[in-house]
Structure formats: structure tokens, C-alpha cells
Image 1: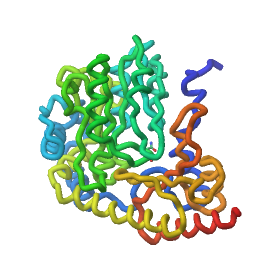
Image 2: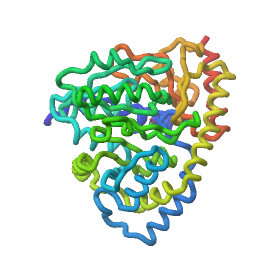
Image 3: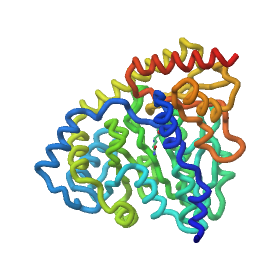
Length: 387
Ligand code: GLN
């Protein structure tokens, strides 16, 4: 038997699938993998059904239906002051495909790519699979700052690109304006391309609107910005995402996309195009998630769990040691799901190397209040039985 590619043979199954599998087999409440419990907005589901009946179900244009590409451009003009043409929007089957297509198009063998830890677990294997070298730069809790000196020390003659995730999953933190300016200055000075995974851009609870690195001076020609309808509308299974880039770069990104999934289901594209044109729909989603976040965070605090500062995403992280749990995050995640019936994500699963923080657990708050209360009671009982 031939050996398969070592990048993949050496890989574990993604932590999200692993924890959801354990949740299924233990019948646990799943606060691990990030997905809302409720369906997407009814208007969106109705739009899919309508598109199924009224529109073609055959291959749509490879880069996306023009109506969705225009809707994405209009959406970013309205929310983030970006001036985009249709040609700059390439629709993908989810943001994970967009990340893969961007890495395929940007990274060549031998290129070094800066990744900031904790990092979404797709980034490093994709870089390795194309022959690139991930250079892992740590962000430090509790504020997950980007440290200029550490970044500069990681840059060498082979550095070609960096992958930035803002707002940041798993921590739920948001980059400040000074950090954006600093990263843009580093990218322009060192001639780096930047893949910006901004899928959490609308899921914010600090009353601020997202500002993209793409809008910083000098970044328009060197940035691939990635977005996701799954996050904006709480429709994770739809797998509709997109890449945004300058026209010449977008044309090359489209060539990577054309041999990954080629197209994305047209009925879903039609529905997302309608949804993006309805600001009320997006605001209602965020209001729902602000409420679930309050339930989880208040419930954690009242039960003596230490909540880390965050302002975005469907996630809240807790400091285990400060919550009276003297076990590492992996052990806690594996035991909590089996013994208490609550699935979570250990932050160290999103960090390579020996210096991973091992005292932080991620919980998804986008669930009904009763489910969150039940999970909280189970977690508190489990912790109290430890001592
Ligand atoms: N982004 C999701 C999360 O953080 C996981 C996506 C996936 O499971 N591939 O939970």
C-alpha cells in the first residue's frame, strides 16, 4: 500500500468534529463546535425554497451568481466603507474553502507564512500541504495582543504572507485600530500578502462595526478578505462564503476555487443575496446572540467560573485554573463531555507546540437559555465533585 500524503496522515481529525462526535455518542449538550441551535431566519429558508422552484438548479457561474457578488459588494460598502466591484467578489462553498483557495493561490513551496496562535486549525495544514512553512507567532492571554517585536523577529527573507483572523476565534477578541495599523505597516514594509479571515465581522457585542485590514493604507492590492454567510445568518450548514480581493488577484483566486468546488449551490446563493439586502435580519441575529451571550456569561459568573474578556463571536472562554479546576483543558473537555454531558473546545487544540496555554476552555453561547442553564448546572456540579 502506498503511503498517503504525510501532512494528512499525521493529522488528527479536527477538534470540532471530534468533540461533536463525542457529544453525539454521549448524548451531551454541545457547546463545542460553533453553531447556533436555532435554524437560520425563516425569510432565508423561504428564499431557498423559492429559488429551488423558480431558478435554475444547474451550475451557476463559477465565481458566483452576479446578484450575490453585487450584494456582497453593497453589504461591505454599507457596513465597512469598502469600495468593491463585482469582479472583486468570488463566492465559495464556505469560508474554509475560501481559506484553502487563498492558500493555494498565494503560497508557493518554500514560502513562510505567519500564523498567529491560537489559530483556526485549517490554516497550518493547508500551508504545509502546498509546501509552505507555517511560522507560528503566539498571542498571549488574556488580551491576545499582537506583539510587534515578536512579529518582526518571525519575519525572514522567505516570508511571503500572513493569515489574520479578526474577530478572533476561539477567544472572541477584536483587534484594535492601532494593531490594524501596525499589521498593515508590517505587511507593506515587508511586502507580504495578507489572508484576512473576517468571518465573525458582524457577530460583535461592543456596539462597534468591523473595520477590515483591507481598508488600511497600502492593503488593497495585497489582501484577501474572507467572509461567511454561515456566520452572518447562523446558517453554518449552508457553506456559503466568499473571497474579496483586488480585481487581478481575485481572478487568480477564482482559478483556485474552480478546481476545489467549482461552484456553490445556486439556491443558497440567491437566498444569501436576499438576506444581505435586509439589515434588519442581520441586526436581529446579533441581538439574539447578544442575549444568549449574556445568559452564558452571567450564568458562568454566578457559578464561580472565570470568564475571559471578549466582544465578538458565538464563543466565551473560561479560565479553568481561576474557576477552581486544576486540570488541563484537554482533560477537562474529554471528561466534561463523558461525565457531565457538556461538550466544549479546549483552546490548546488550536495551538501547535509546547507553549500552548492549557487552562482555557471555549464554550458556544448561541443556544436556548434553558439549554445553557442545564449545561451550566452540569458543569458546576462536575467541578464541585472534583475537590
Ligand atoms: N468555525 C467553527 C468553530 O469554531 C468550526 C468549523 C468546523 O467545524 N469546521 O466551531
